Length: 456
Image (cartoon, rainbow, N blue to C red; front, top):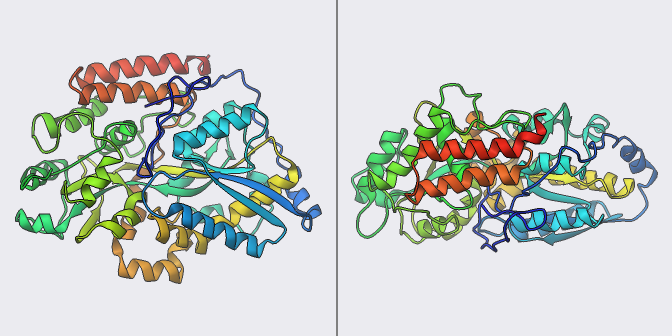
């Protein structure tokens, strides 16, 4: 993965709108345990809300677009609807590029003491933002606001909003990894289009049979989101559903466990041994394009591309849980909504009203229907909007149903260096320059060095 200049290690690489949903391209490379202790005093903001209810407030709202589809149009529509119902709060939406570009712009603002008032950022940026003392906890807002119920949000999405007993963001633009498959190609290969592969062995068998007539049987992206994909296979290869690539406090990683080595070997074998897909590193943005254009029969990709595929594929397609080894599993992906520290209390209070509105059940349902991201609240699926959509397009429920097997995406202190250490080694494996065991051992060592300051 690319990581940052100054805050980062390498230059940013611009990406298309089909960039990843779980993506951490250009993640922050350095953070320091010597940074100021994160503020825990958001208690003045709710009071400010009452005092300034009739005062006009203008908010700057940063958000990224990392999948294909009309996300910008949906965001603008939701923002306009908010301003219609909150005439004293003006929100200026600022599209900032992909997740990496978005984080660079936000960090530049933090350094200049001019952050946005509210933003969608990767869920994995939690520790980076805390180490930068850049965000406020939301617990006081939540406690004093009976209109929001955190238990209504899916636990798999809440998992990466919290640390140290506090909540620092609200789930918004969230996803899991799913399997997309071309039902017409299934029929042509003699496969039942209503029975997608359920196990790793099935996936190998199906992909080999589907690799015909000039198209690939399967594509799995291996560039900027490669650690996210490895995390998928790793979760599926453990017998303990609580095992992940990192500790809950973001201070340790477990990259070189035997199950993870087996997972990476499986990914490599799909191309090198079984010839079920192209060898080497397949680009994240290319995969959905290839699937839509009929160049691959199956793809493993973010559920955030669901609306993009629905709107552009000229064939009947299915969506399923990614095939399992020992258990089903997927890392969650996407972004949460954060409120920033270096803004006025009245702006923080107004930003909370905006965050709350954007994640209300009806808005969550509209956002899901319009983009393909998962409705982040259980009640969103009880709205007429979602019920009608799910009835006509049941594929929309797959990612939601998978949340019972989902866990937080890789997130640690010094996340840029940690994730880059793993990404670089995965790509080396896929390129054929190192074996999985040696690669993950090296990634573990590099990550431990990056995390050493946080484990004193």
